[in-house]
Image 1 (cartoon, rainbow, N blue to C red):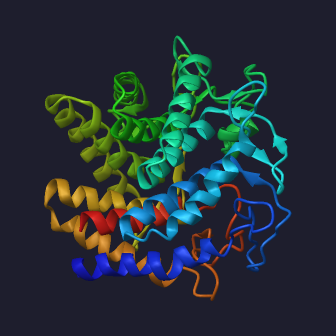
Image 2 (image 1 turned 45 degrees about the vertical axis):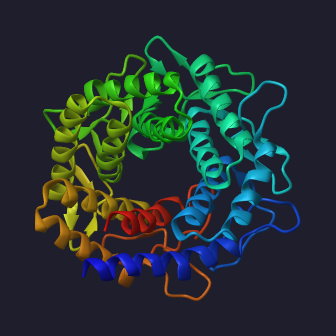
Amino acid sequence: MIMDLKEEARGHLQQKLIPFWEELADERFGGYCGYVGFDLRPDVSAPKGCILNSRILWFFSRAAQALKEERLLAYARRAYDFFPHFVDGDNGGLYWSVTYDGQPLDTMKHTYVHAFAIYGLVAYAEASGDREALERAMALYTLIETRMRDGHGYLEAFSREFEPLENAKLSDNPKLLARGVIARRTMNTILHLVEAYTQLYRVGHDDRVRSSLQNLLWVVENRVYNRERNRLEVFFDDDLNSIFDMQSYGHDIEASWLIDLAAQTALSPEDCARVRGWTTELARGVIDRAFQGGRLLNENTEGENDPTCIWWVQAETMVGLANLWQKTGDLRWKMDMEEAWRFITTRLVDPREGSEWFWSLAGDGTVCEKPIVEPWKCPYHNGRMCMELMARL
């Protein structure tokens, strides 16, 4: 079954995901179409988000390497060539979004956006050999370290001129917003800075990046990870105190393998072994609490589970289970992985021609009629799942 799963992941990448995203290339204005409705109709006039563009850049760059298909670099190059539209030439940094033809739209500067831009640029630099892309990634790293952090860590939301703003875009839990509370710092941004800096150091070998990554890993282990409850806290105040009782199952299973990768990249063998110990416990806890019938629940807020089946959560569950099986050798995780794959391919993958994955399923299993593509719905999680399985199995 494992060898079959490896080949199925390769086939899914080549036959379902890549063809879908290739078709979204915007031949007139550059980049990629920013929206496809549930009816599978692209909206060529939709805004284009920097997160989506960066993730598409990452996807085609990594796919070109994983499949050894040089033709895919042309699709990566399309996203790379559109990248300058997000750059604020006057103040520095990247806009949240632009119009379909590349004019500034939402001019907020967000640390999360910059992390994903680094992630995409590094992947493109590695796949193409383009030194300029790596230099751009390093310039964004310098900007984050000099303009987006303070004595307590990383701030998140800024105006065009880098004045701090309320972090509403990443404080999007309805219960939290209903209380009028906005998180100053989030686990989500910290985790994806770890992810970006891991790849930047791995490819660029700059000791400043390694030092920043080591600091981030310390913060995750000592401030974000709650040992007593065996979970990552999600929303924080300025001093990194948790402000809301919540566990994001998807982020925790994703973190369980991303943190391992970061630790292997930047820490000593002794420190890496310690980190791998608690990430193993984190992954086990997530599966024990939230893996039901081949799918992972969405989250738990104030003791109440949200049973919604989210596309990206299931993709990260596959990688988390593969990592857990590799670390422990316990066949239970292998069996869970195979069950999760069956669920994904029979329930979450959209069987319609010219589509890829549904956004989500309701708790009763019915399909939620949400967009197939929008600023957050991208080929990053499910594409990475395929490539991780191809590499690991």
